[in-house]
Length: 235
Image (cartoon, rainbow, N blue to C red; front, side, top):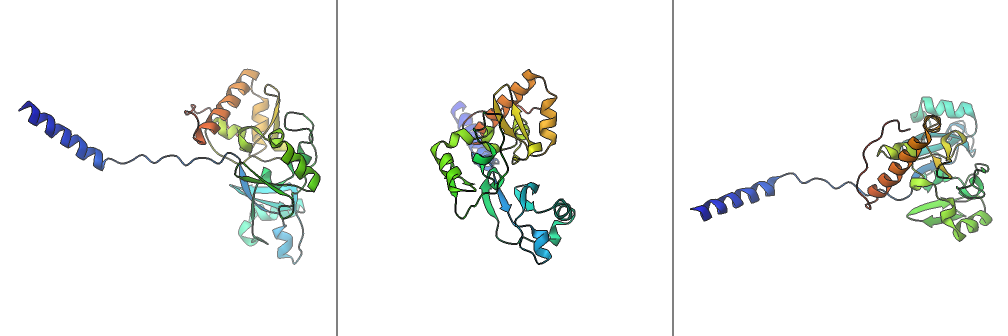
């Protein structure tokens, strides 16, 4: 009788297990943040002009980013994106499509910042860790090839603040969205100007904790580490 009960219990457990919902595995995050770039100003295109936009006049929605020739065009697009369709097929690139060697002339661990220069993905592109980096000229492309890690932002260039709270947002390389984390001696990208402003208000210990949480979350999302608890105030 005891053996019969054990068998019945086991059979019931196996039946329940067969019909239990299976937890979906979290998709692995690509190591490096990329966005779909539209280099040509779509507002100018609607007016019959083919004009290359400027990266400092960028507008991002999720993982899509547009460059514009003027502040007015950027504002017009932001108010009604549907009115200004893409001019040409988008290109998925790392570092919002700009030349990281020009932007960080001595690497991401040096405080010096260079200009934002549009990369030429058709002529000067380098694949690295599953992402494509575009460069403005052959010299910067070769400099990157020689030592790509010199130009690697923390957490693959994703927004550091969002990643510290276990969220995923592309980082941007604008003046207002970069922050030099002195405690780690490295530049970090954020998804909006709110991020650097918020991190500047943190204590040194808080910045270190959040930075470490972001690194751990990035690693875990790539399949390499356990989760880190959520931390508030991510930008």
